[in-house]
Image (tube, rainbow, N blue to C red; front, side, top):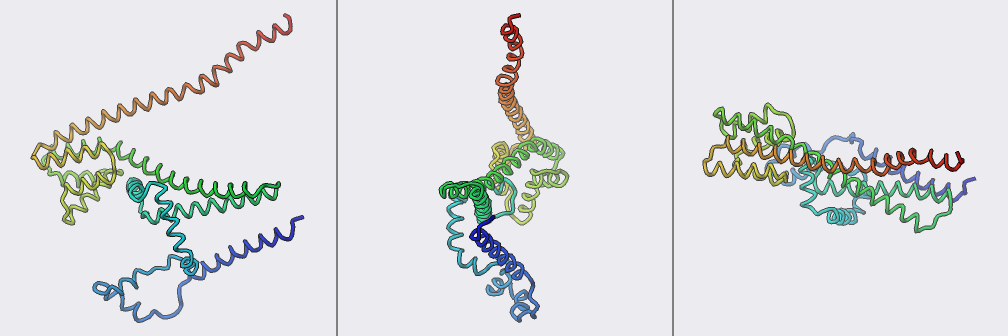
Length: 315
């Protein structure tokens, strides 16, 4: 039979969760009252009125404004600590850019905090289940909660790192083909910007979309060389960075670009072959582990066991 104290504790937890859920639903429902005069006039004066822009920028994104206002200093402090623990602002911004994520740095820090809170809740439930099954010390329960929170934060950061590495790998695999397309366009007599625009239009992939953003930036009036350098700094892809350096140098010196890009494409393919051979060598060593520690001992056991059995039987 469950003790009354345990039922009361679970009742308090369920009541708090129900109250927060109902509060969130009520706060998200639209108001039935007529819009104010300021709300109706603000869209027409937002170009020259700072107050109108602030009024239009306000959005109901926090369903619990009172709790958010109470705990916002602690949340901001926790986000800053998590950001410093996981590489700082520059590292997080670079990973988000490499993963092509629309999340901001502060948003990612908030996600880390949310994942940590979710892990802590899971750890709390596990510790309660363990305590009900058998007597467990308080230190063990606290360690379970803290460990689950840390695992939640690490899991979110690992997902971002994996997404960034996977996209960078796709960019590296697409780079030789894109360079060859650019070489063909330049050899046909097109300019650099026209060749990049053609490749971005007819190609599909991560690198083509990045080149499309370069074309859009150049169309707004930014220089082509500076835009390419900024893209190389954001992606942090060494082969692409070398290509951009060679391309901007050729643009400054007037060197034929087709030959430069053809040589860069060949170099990138050679680098890809070398990396593939290195990965194959590492995989070959990894494939030897089950052979040496699993298959070989089983084979030896099957070869020796019948002889030992015959000797023990005295045949």
